[in-house]
Image (cartoon, helix red, strand yellow):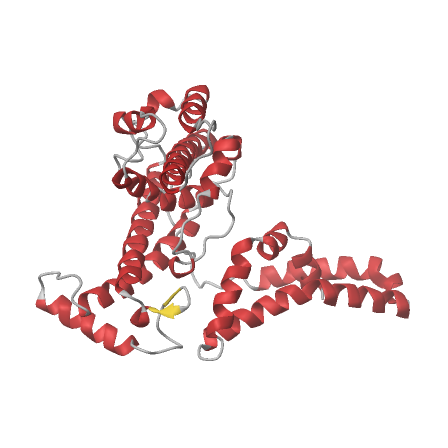
Length: 349
């Protein structure tokens, strides 16, 4: 019960329970629960997560009713001592001293400079994606007479006020200076691709504490951009940042999705790598995974082997982009300093 109480008072617990994506993923698992044991495990973990408050309240009621709560002041020091001993006993034994890994430690100044660089990139990407959302809305909807779109002015004022405008690539500045409603669909779709880097920057900056796998995040959300346009200080004023191990886990997960999706695209003939051995290997992977409800990777509510062409190609591109961005972020963390200016968004694509 002690571990349940600790979980209940952690902020990450309530973030996980209250975030919208938790329930979207639960619905996806519910649709697959009859044929995929991974979905059933996911629903079981979610059920236990939701059951935690009830278990804690019930346990407290039992303590009060039985009078056992009088012993709590004596039990807490014992639990603390046992946990301390368990941590000590869990340390591995070595016959001889083992060399320490030579990992470069960032100074606090370098770490904050690097974080500021990621924060400025996050705001830049948020502005560009928010403008793309505004341009898309103007092309798809008929604005009421007398309504004036002010996205351009708001975005330019924001970037100049916080000192990002002069650091931007010329192509990005030119795109933002165009009058509202003058972006073509090619530009809108191109800039909308910046939603994935923005999502990763928000995660690196710990604005979003959880990064679902690619198969659970196929669609974008313009709201994550608009939020930072309204409150850029969420990115600029923080001090937390994902460490190397967190980025490595995210990169490796994205790479696994990319390799699986790439094998499927090659085996279906959507992409020719020009290497017979690669084609053969891709075919073997695809054949081994086809229809395997408990093994194959899931895109939304369907297996990779069941996905349509457009969905498969999009997932392949998204996984590759996520892998490459996180690998790039890791290289900056290893170097301990930001990349050379300018800050780029559109021109990076």
